[in-house]
Image 1 (cartoon, rainbow, N blue to C red):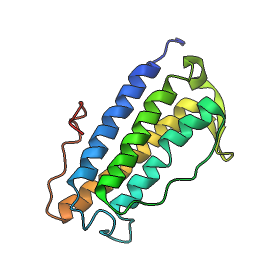
Image 2: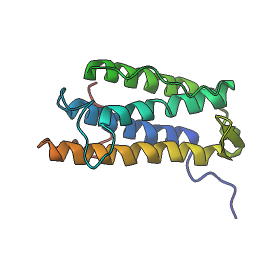
Image 3: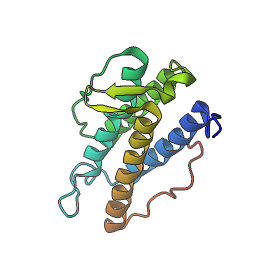
Length: 160
């Protein structure tokens, strides 16, 4: 079995950032009145789901890079602009912290937040998968509201 990496850390980061760009466009697509209120079938509103995503990405990397395992998140914003500001700040922190993690660490076992033990690369994939899952909920909400969601496959740089 080869010990070569399937994907480089930089490629994984770029993959994740592409997903974050799409999720940002989903936040932008929501009508203001429904971002923090609309739900279907007892699921949480998309604003709350976005706050969960914000509470996972940068805090995970901060824990790995700095040993600071704080899972607290800011209070839920009341406007789309405030949520987008938090999203962008979180993305910038992800990009910065990623550079502080040596490639050798991605195969290390970590105990994230004192309760989630696993290989770092598996924990990061979970964070990415969680974002994709919740973004899918956002797509359902947008369609129910009569809004065409952004194309999920258009992950390139967008005007933010």
